[in-house]
Amino acid sequence: MLLAILIFILAGLAEIGGGYLVWLWLRESKPLWYGIAGGFILVLYGIIPTLQSFPSFGRVYAAYGGVFIVLAILWGWLIDKKTPDMYDWIGAVICIIGVSVILWAPRG
Image 1 (tube, rainbow, N blue to C red):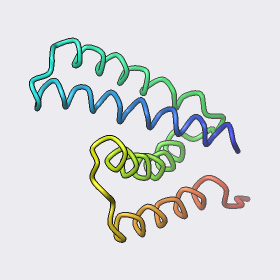
Image 2: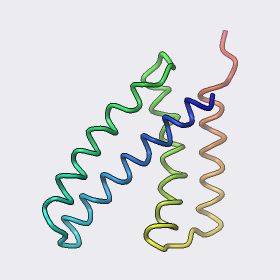
Image 3: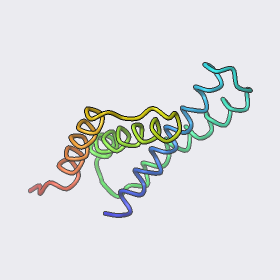
């Protein structure tokens, strides 16, 4: 379970970090190398979730979506200095509950 969570976190950081670098390049006129580095990191993001041991692509990506939401809120708070409000946190908790159901519900 800890390995699954770690892989989701690594994937999220790669997706958000890569996307953020591309954002900085295109929206905030940073140098081209920001976009190139962001693109490379986004390719890594595409690879990282395949390291999960879960057999279903759909379930892995659905569960990852919830983790991504929490990481995006934290990124915005820590990197962009945009403090999340109560509704951000409520939504994040709902997502994590959903992730838990998707991944660890007993199936027959």
